[in-house]
Length: 160
Image 1: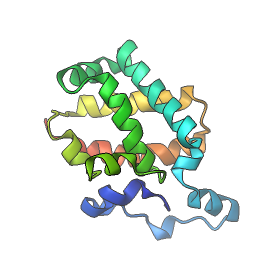
Image 2: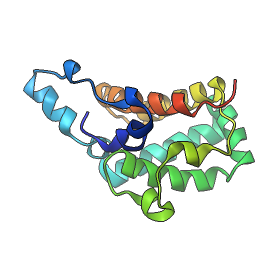
Image 3: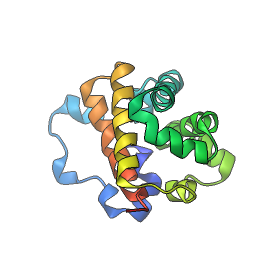
């Protein structure tokens, strides 16, 4: 998995490292694996659309209710729209906007003030899966995105 989506997670989560035994021998598939997630989502424009769609779900749909309440206790949804875009840009291999602004991109540090339980983790993953579908990304790209999202969401659970 040649992407920076493992950069900060990989340092603290050995499971985030790619498994070379699972590399494909199919040249077309290998080329796609080399393509950055940032490019696969459509660069800046595609990423912005994904983040906006995700937070529209969080704010206005029942699937996002748990997350919306968490955001209301924190910095708010408007702040999160901006910072998630900034973070995911670098996480997907594009410009490292979050790290440039905050001097780190440690997701645990970003979320240390938030109580995250399994329900919140599952809601986040469900809302992101819906957003990926709504913006029309192909199924293979969805799989590539959801793998690191699932790893990160799992390590962020800090409450039973």
